[in-house]
Structure formats: C-alpha cells, structure tokens
Image (cartoon, rainbow, N blue to C red; front, side):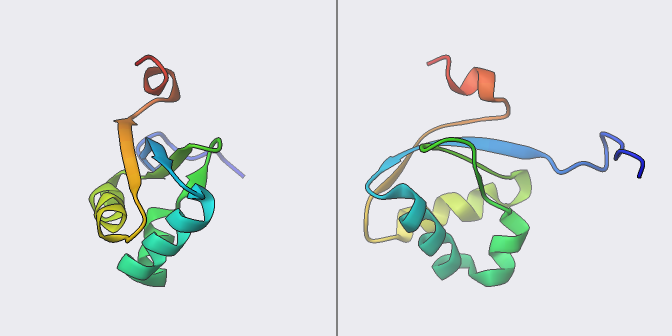
Length: 88
C-alpha cells in the first residue's frame, strides 16, 4: 500500500493534562460530552501517562468536555509537536 500524502494525513494536536485518574476520566468525559461519533472523530490516543493526542478539528470539543466534567481535568499546554510540548 502507498503511504498517504501529507495533505491527506490527519492533523494532530498534543495536550499535556493534569488531574486524577486521567486515563479513565478523559475517556468518560469525552464520550459523555460529544458521544461515540465524536470520540471517533477526535480519535484520542495516549502518548504517555499525561499526554493525549487528538484530531485538530475536534480540539475545542475535547477541551469543552474537560471543562464540563465534574472531576478536575486541567489542560496545561496544547502543541502541534511533542518536542515543543515539553519545552516549558
């Protein structure tokens, strides 16, 4: 199979998060706020225990789901690359 052209690839943003029990709470908050279809559009992937990768177009919906969730999930930083995410 041929690799995808750069214009056809999914654009991603990386979020550095802070909170309690992140892996469980993040998945539940996104699913509760934007639903199953929204989760598939956002395509959240864990890079490490506190770094989440999401689709660029659904970034605002994901951040809104964290704001509405009863337990505190704080977005410390959003970046387009992992290298610049760890600089500050």
